[in-house]
Image 1: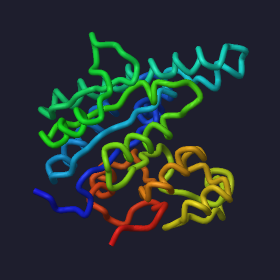
Image 2 (image 1 turned 90 degrees about the horizontal axis):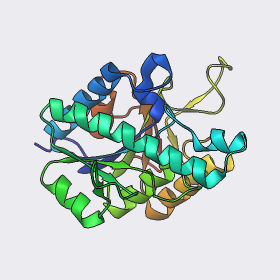
Image 3 (image 1 turned 90 degrees about the vertical axis):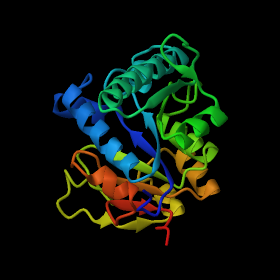
Length: 242
């Protein structure tokens, strides 16, 4: 049953969102909760694709900063995202939600290769598609992956599930009690003010393809469903669709 204003969404999850309060690794209880929310999104008839980060296991930039070759460090980060994707797939399957992991790096024993038309077909059949291994290229973030995949599969919106924040602020609300939360922002303002909703490459890609971004707190149960149904939650970049 289609009850929201979005037909197809891309959910962007950071690796930290899967770690929960433990701060690292994969927290099965947190992954199970997110899987339950995704199941509810599907129940409302919304096509759902997911892009997962890998920062709970490995960060390429951190490795590079300590002297590791940047490309090697980034490839390691891509492998970490596949681990997270498989954990989410397992949680979804246990809730009777059919899903497929598609990897930008070929690893056929555990995931399908990324094929755009196949991903779209999976969603048309009601399956959740989880995109792992980033874009398959070093120097590109999983934020850029989310923007690229959203454009490719013609998603209506990118839902940025953030940990410990309920939107975009003009400064760090954890350090500045007077920080101002934005309800809506333009892409240009995000870039000019360096608000770090996404990296600049991802933000520009969303702007060029007119893909709105909704930033919300993934920690609160039901927030994902509210965001996917188009409720006014968090911060919307690029304007709320009427």
